[in-house]
Image (tube, rainbow, N blue to C red; front, side):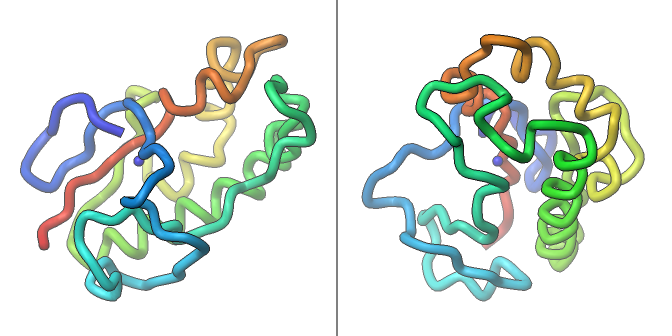
Amino acid sequence: QGPQGPQGPQGPQGPGPAPGPGPMVSPGVMPVESPQQLPREGIWYTIQPACSEPTRSRGDYSAYPHLSGKAQFKQSMTPRAGVLVKILGTLSIDPQCTLCERHRGYEEHLGAEKHWKALYPTYTGENVIIEDVKDKLWNQTKIPG
């Protein structure tokens, strides 16, 4: 979910900064099945909780349980991708991975080995501080409304 040039009026945008904390971020998790269920425009809503919380500040991949191996990564990412696909599907939007060149279906891809490998070493390598690189991995999709 971050900007780098639209690929169409509703299409995906490339990696960029994630929304920062402040008045435009809603507190807590708000599960929804479509964007129309969100109470206000212009507010960032958390639809799913974080995959994991870091076990230490300024840690590398080993501080994040969901990054500790391919199986844990897949188990964490695939259901979240499914939620996003379902929500955007209500608007006929097919999300795309902006990190990997080609893939077959976002829901399958996000937790897959190809995506896991694309993160290494730039984002999840030894001694790469996740807090310093995580904002580069957000994808943002513009939706009508």
